[in-house]
Image (tube, rainbow, N blue to C red; front, side):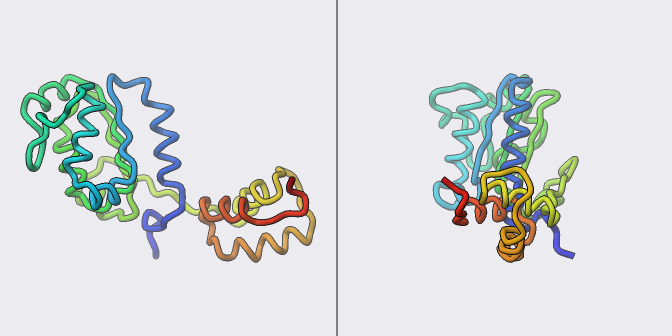
Length: 192
């Protein structure tokens, strides 16, 4: 069976963002690195390492702390005394996790690293402590999200709207991003 982590648009980034926003105040330092896959391809891993260290170490110029394949011992020592929250969004290679977060010993006690990926094997290879698979929406929840966005209402919709909605939702396959997105772009006579 298909693994739900592989599906795009299921809400991994949205969920990671919500968790990050809820938890970040409980940490001494925190960083949300979005679109890791795309940004590594465009700018290289060292660019993301500098951004991560800038936010975690609160240093204007993090360049001196970046080394090929890791970070300096001085940076590791500082981070090992700091409780951090790091979110790596859309990782497609376990080497990216290793390059950005090294061994879990880089960070202080009670630190947390959250990774969103389309490929479960990235997490397995990195020996993740816990893997949470985000599921697609059932048909009722898809219809509710679509109706909320298409018709701007959280109530019963007319039979004609239900049939149209079900045909459109057949294409979304329960993906929250697609269901909500299609709802926003659907024209409705009830819409202002």
